[in-house]
Length: 158
Image 1 (cartoon, one colour):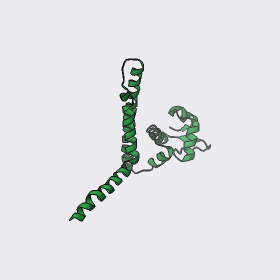
Image 2 (tube, rainbow, N blue to C red):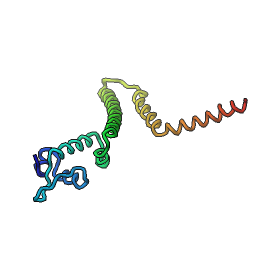
Image 3 (cartoon, rainbow, N blue to C red):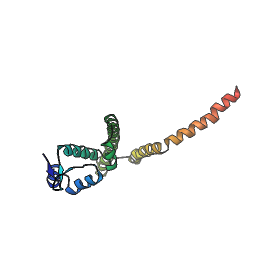
Image 4 (cartoon, one colour):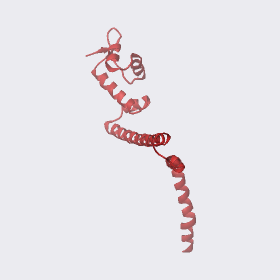
């Protein structure tokens, strides 16, 4: 079955403007009817379903353009990687919810938090961020220091 733009928009819940934009970008290219109107078929419905899925997985439109052209194996690897990214975000959100719950309980008087406990999770977050941002540099510098202070003196002692 073929749908004109407005009917396809109603069917999919995607605005006609967005459909035209996806067409302009080459993401979703419908057939052109003899009268010049865009016609969307089941093939475009399948492709739009993938686009919407990838958008919900927080891929950008530029990334989606690439995803739609990837070989199957590469696509699977990319999606598996995105799954890991989303799991990490889920863990961060769970941590933030726990902090919020503890703060709410403390504010309601249901939980007495020590001053140290109020900031413990923030310290852990700062450590993780520093490790992410500077970890490789610290390891490189530590290895260089270890080499200078331990390995070189040991070799010269031989």
